[in-house]
Every structure is written in C-alpha cells, then in structure tokens.
Image 1: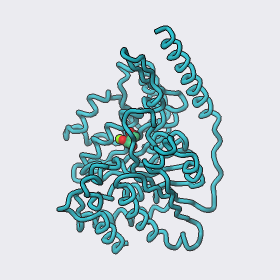
Image 2 (image 1 turned 90 degrees about the horizontal axis):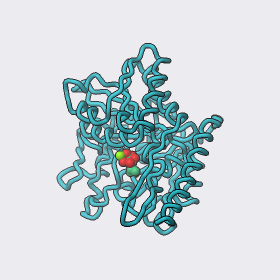
Image 3 (image 1 turned 30 degrees about the vertical axis):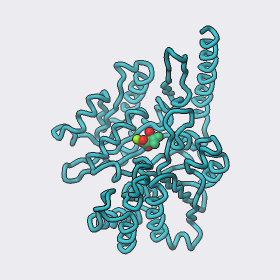
Image 4 (image 1 turned 90 degrees about the vertical axis):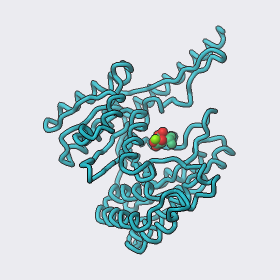
Length: 373
Ligand code: IPM
Ligand code: MG
C-alpha cells in the first residue's frame, strides 16, 4: 500500500508542476501576427464525420470560390484523425497530423470517436489544449420563443485538463482532478463580457457549483464577478448549475438569459440541453477559439451506431454547416456567413434530414443547399 501511495503522490506532483507551467505560460503569451493567406483545414473525423463534413466543405468551396482562385484562402484536407490511425499510433492526435493542423489557421472538424475507459484522451480535448482553444462558443436560438443565447464555456481546464490522468488505488478507489487557473478564468470571462458589450447584451449568467466546488468554482465565480465590475451596463448573476438546468426548461424564466459564462464540464452538459431546445444536438454549431487558432465543429459525436446500422447517408449535416457559418464569421466574411445561414434554413425545410430512412439524405441536403448558394 505504501508503495502505491508514494506512486500516486509523485504522479500528483508531476501533474501539479505541469499545471503550474501551463498557468505561467498563459500569462506570458504573445499574440501572433496577421497573415495574408488564411488556410482552412478540413478534418473529416470518424463515423458520420466524413459524410457530414464533405457537405460543409462543398458549401465552403462554392462560397469561397473567388478567394480560393485569388489565393487568399486555401482549403486543405487533413487525413489521419481517424480512430484507426489514432489507435495504431497510440496517440489521441498523432504527431504528423498535429503538425499539419498547426500549419492551418482555422479548422472545420468532424466528430471524432473517443474510446471510453483506457488512457487515450479525446482528440477534441487534445486539440483544444494543443491549439490553446480556450473559449468554446455555442449559440442557441429559438426565435419563436424569444430565445437567443450565447454560451461561453471555458474549454481547456476544469475536469478536462487532467481527465485521463487520474489516480487509482486498485481495489479501493479512484481520483480525478479539476483545475482552474486565474489566467484561464480571466480570459474566458473577458471573452464573454466583451461579446456581451459588443453585441448589446445586458445580462451575463455565471454558472457554477461554487457552494460545493469551493476552491475551483469559488475562484471562477469571484473572478467573473470582479470582471463584471468593469462592465457597468451589464448585470452579472450567478446560478448554480443544477438550478440552471431547470431554468432552461422553464419557459417563464429562460427568455431572460442572454450570455452564459461557465467552467468546462457544466458548459459541456448545458449546451447539449440548450441545443435540444433548438431542435437537437444535430442542429447546433460550436466554435473553439484561441488567440492563434480557431476550430469549428458539430456539437454532437461521431454516431458510430448510425454507421453500424447502415444509416450513415442519413446523418444530418446541419450542425457542421452551422459550424461553417461560424467559421465564415470568424474569418471576417459576415455576408457569406449570412448567405450560408439563410440557405441552410431554406434547404433544411425543403429537405428535412431526420437521421432515419424516412428522412432525406445528407447528400440531398447538400445538393439543395448548393443550388441555393
Ligand atoms: C463537446 C463534446 C466533447 C466534450 C467530447 C467529444 C470530448 O461532448 O464538444 O461538447 O466533452 O467536450
Ligand atoms: Mg458535449
């Protein structure tokens, strides 16, 4: 037993040192220079990923035809972020694939499968860390109900930072860790309050469980409240995650929310709930933003069951197409983003894809969309 305790303590020491180095690195960061050419990397991923991503790529190629011809934008396909290749190399993101990804500026990424259990980290979590994509930004809107929400989920810390590096005392117990840094909290809070200020929003809901997670959420809460004082026109209110999940399904209350700001895991859970109110996780796009890179993706997973059941062609590409809309906005092409968004709404109503054989196929939606661009 003593030996096991010693092993766990020295493992913990390594983790602590790595997190201190990360926190210090964040404070020292310098911003990249602007480049003349924007490289968009397209990563198909696993399961339904390559099928839905192909439709988004076609839409981008059509919309960006002139920029691609002029050489100011390049669309580059990145292979190798598949579960087979990752398992073979024994790495969540194999080194050569990571290098190719880092040579791009923005990424459109299909869902990737994460083996449950074992020690292989999710490719998403690895990429968010390696590219330092600290803000997970997810819009949800249900216009007929007056719902227009923007979620700012911290994307590199919390339970995710060391999620595959926990401790096990076999036959007795397991322990995972949750990490919150001052710099990591401030930068996500800044992003949320700046978004609120620049978009005429007057309310930011800070979501935590600071009554229980006293150190991590306690500090997150305190820093967010401190930052709120720099934004006089904006009211910041804190809600615990449990009651917030209830509020989101309470029609009398949910309309008042505008911007949400929260640590990683709560954001993961609550954005799926919010997406469901909009029509399902298949309809929601997601942006992972950092200072140097940004990665846009579907909010849902790779749906291996759909592939096993032969339903891949019926997968809904709407979520990744919404991610493409966000990508266009991010690279400062708001008119093209608007065009894609409008066309997508029309195509989705003409050609509903339900994920079953009764619905249209992914490709049919893509064809209809292209005819509208
Ligand atoms: C998400 C997903 C990911 C997460 C998975 C795929 C690792 O659920 O982007 O919300 O948990 O963050
Ligand atoms: Mg999720």
